[in-house]
Amino acid sequence: MINKEEMIKLLCKSYPGFRDRMVSRASDWMSEDGSILYIILIGSLSALVLERFTEGNYDNSDELFVSVEVLLENGDAQVRDIIATGFLENMQNQTELPGKYWAPLLGRHATEFCRGMDEFHGVKTEGLRCYNA
Image 1 (cartoon, one colour):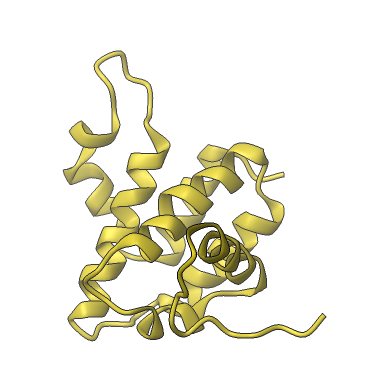
Image 2: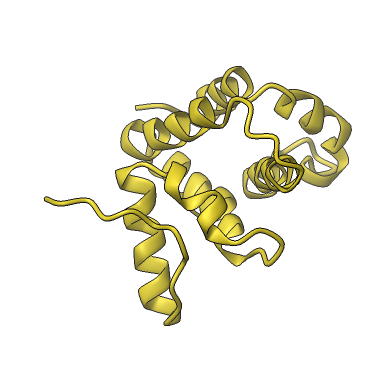
């Protein structure tokens, strides 16, 4: 199972610029006692992705979304929760970029999570693919 530290390494490798964003915003995700607030850290990744996508920059997006899928499939329970709530929910809950511009990049596990959140909230994320079982 992939743990939190391995998750960060994988995301930094798959999405250039995330490491720089982490460093520049460390005061947002690191508490005074040095503990890491992973949900906020991964939320900064979704913000970076949205900024780039809004500018039309989809560089390395395939690699990132493959990594998200790997983390949902092979991460430990904490990693799966962090990716689902810190990344996917942030993508769904933002209002700057319609789902049709990012949802088609999601893999099976991420799509299933987003569909579940849509059902829970009674909304529909535009652009979610259908997977046949």
